[in-house]
Image (tube, rainbow, N blue to C red; front, side, top):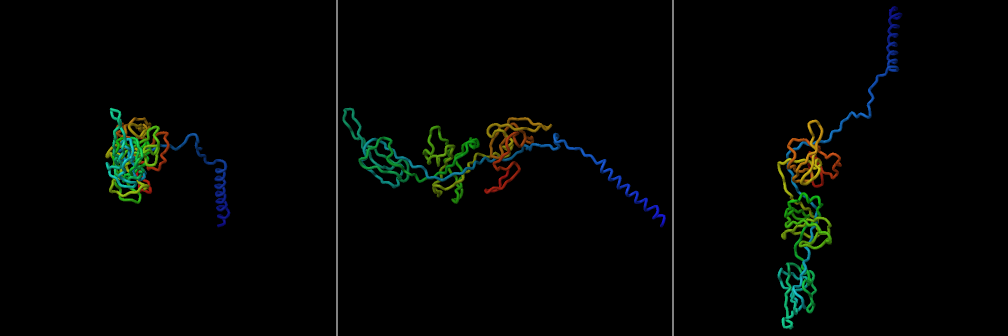
Length: 332
């Protein structure tokens, strides 16, 4: 035991202290070296999102907001020049198309220089309520003067359409599906027309269905409400115009195509990772995807976004994504 105390324990303590001293010297004078990252040479790689061309369905429905309005009043023109001799109806009366409204007496010269009476009867051009009428016996009118106005009983729905949406309606449909806020079940609105005011034409000018429905300066969609549907002027409405459907066709996201109608350009990803610009022909467009009718084959890979184009900010989902909206779920 005395040998252990005299020799063994002191030697062990010397070894322990020697190890500690060596470790401290290593840390102080020979620290581990790590390769410093070069800020000029990035270590991460940015890969542009890509899309593999596949088949799908494009439903080209254009949805617009509109308003219900009463059809415009129709002027009752005088068919001759002369003095009112008889009035057959009164203000506020219902008249049928072709019904007699008043009788005019005029004078026409004869070949011998004498004058003869010329009688002309003014009739209603349409059916409706005589909403404006103040003709009196003895009053004078010239040909074409409005002797009154008739308010037809019909209604129409109208709404403005962004000009770029007209590309989706090259094949102009003749009807739309209309939903009235707080109203009856959706119904088919017929006689659909798309009009754009001509240069110099005043806004809000009348048409067969009440003009542009509010004096919009851009394109306007108007359609006739069926007579058996109960509506009131001023109601809000939603119009869905079916511009066609293409099933089992090649599609691509509109973010991947330069252009949206007729022709466009896409950027095809080549086997070596580079890209080439390629012209494609386009079909239907639903606002998210566009039909590819030529220029691409199924399975080819293209850039999902046109290089340099800003990312979409209209709240629409990207292909393969779904978003929740107040109107339901929308999927790209």
